[in-house]
Length: 193
Image 1 (cartoon, rainbow, N blue to C red):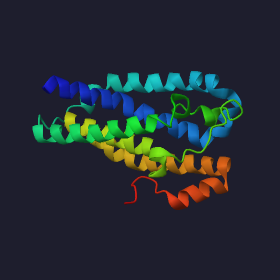
Image 2 (image 1 turned 135 degrees about the vertical axis):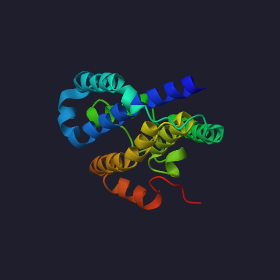
Image 3 (image 1 turned 45 degrees about the horizontal axis):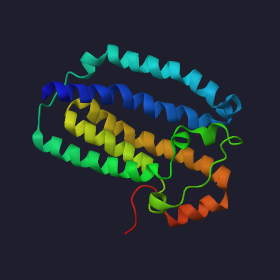
Image 4 (image 1 turned 45 degrees about the vertical axis):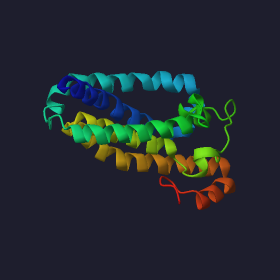
């Protein structure tokens, strides 16, 4: 079990920072990336993402030295949290295609004009993919029970809020009053009951 937890912690360590950084790089500079187009954008950004992953891999030992041990109650909670993330993911995938998730509408509005997603899960919360991502990070951290993944959970909160603020600014620019009305009726992260 210890080796499984270690590899879960390693996957979190290698994937979460580059994933969060990618969107944080794209959203503030969307107009610049839009001029380059999706192929050039991702061609340029793949190198720093891979470099970050390699760098994190090279320093994995000191980053993963604090191990809180196998705690089955935390693993159980982590699995439940992961089930929540998986459930949101299944519902989200009905409306958010891979192209949209990859940012193609932000990078090439003429070729991928996109539409404002307001049905299904998006009728209940505005940003289910970020709720899904946060729950995924939290679930993996609970299963791994290492300090580094817990630190990434805490770090992901302000980063997700910044990404959402930047994304919402883009959506306001693209959809105007339609998006404003949507924001008035649908909460960001927690559904109304």
